[in-house]
Image (cartoon, one colour):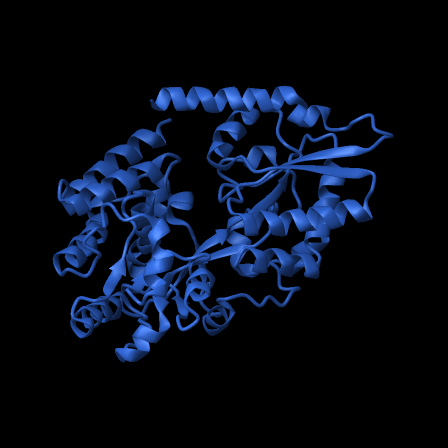
Length: 419
């Protein structure tokens, strides 16, 4: 079935290209008008509407340039792999977290553009290299942490936790004071990528940010001792044993989270994004807050996990590179930075715009907290996300122990590093 799906995706890819989507044919003969091709990973209507609005404004101001935007959804990565293999990229494309590792050799250097001076320094390590090359323009930035029900925490006398010990204690208080009516930590594990997301976020405080317990260099050079990964699995097993997770953790779907939060049935969840505004729309009495990922080791600080969420990179060999950069510069105007950040319920990646979205007060409260890159994107070889997904689900199903999970991670890590 997977092979059939892949063939269908590839058929769709070639059909799109045959219809004239390739960058080599982007300049049309319509009175010298240039058509730029743009691919994005934006998935929901609100996100797409924000970008399409900026595109429409640009086309009004630049009648000689048209932008053909495409949103391939789940087929995005397959399409881009085909394009990279043919060295025929889009004029503009979303690097979705892989601006350097996957797409670095295809993107133009944007360091001389006007907006670079306004780039949030938190994104420097993600979008710049040691030479100063800037790989992509960030339309917004991700600050992933833990979402929580503000009213419930106030009701139970719980302060937003700053450490992992405080977090576990908070979950226990919810369980006891709600007498089981509220799920302390709700995980939509029926889609195993959501379990991988949790492992990806907590790996940073366990393995990266603390000076005495930082193993980033070892993960990068292949010398990491994977027994140190046991503690992540042990935490998840402990939470399940203490009955601090939803009983349907292995079958729950993310589509359920909004209604459950609106009904005050969830205290904490790693689901973020539009959860807050969507839940409040269903029940105006509900307010969803967000906190950075708690610190694990004594003396360490909390961390936001994220970096680039949606980006625009320009293909370095595009015949329309000047026009592509022109659109990027237009998107970086303060009014457009604001429009896209608010339309995607995210924080702005540039400091030149005041953004007011659902979570603004929480981002302001934790504005000094550093944004760390996604663990798998920086420290693991490509392909490890699916391993984190399946092993995490097997752990919660009881078919793997924490040590066995670490062993499988190590085996796949070593295998994929050789590819």
